[in-house]
Length: 290
Image (cartoon, rainbow, N blue to C red):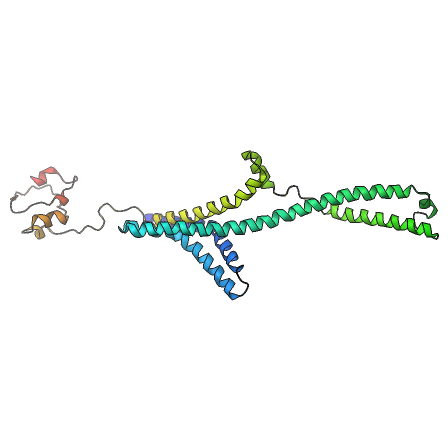
């Protein structure tokens, strides 16, 4: 009973880990299904896609169960169905992951480009502003605070435009610049000695494959742990010795029966009672069979 309880607890723990690992694939399939259409039909597509993912986790345990029952054709059918479901799950996970990573990396890329343009604009605006300040009209207008002449008005408009560009560039620069468009891909590319674009395209495939394999294999191991070790003599019927009297040789060999061990040797005729081969047990002393 204690061993059964431990097996059940371990089985639940393994299955829970598989469900957590596969939750991303199920959510990705549900999201992709909803993208087909925006109404209630999209929700149904999403639920159907997620159901395929969840059922795929159970296909390998079903195959093992059919193999134990002797139905090897059904077992191979479940295994082949699992490969088809695996392709479906990978396609959904990859598409969703690529979409998410593309949005994330492109957003960071735009921020980096905006930051670089703002820094260049700040340099140009600062240089133009310093040049305008060296003009004699700067002093004549008290820094464009006392403007009366028409030429001074044109000059101060240029000054105000340069100041506006400086403020705009400073506001963009104050938001900061992302360190990298895809830091993880850059590090992996450096470790693997390949280009960043290849790593960025390969990561969604790798993630989807690992998550689905972990989910399916955890479910398979959870069911195997729940079943526990097989008994060596499970399902064998114990028959009284009297049933063997008068039985044919084929019946005596087909049905196993146990002969109790005893320390007292009682003589009996070997012609009257024939001991079936299945009843032979190494744990019984050889003297019993004399």
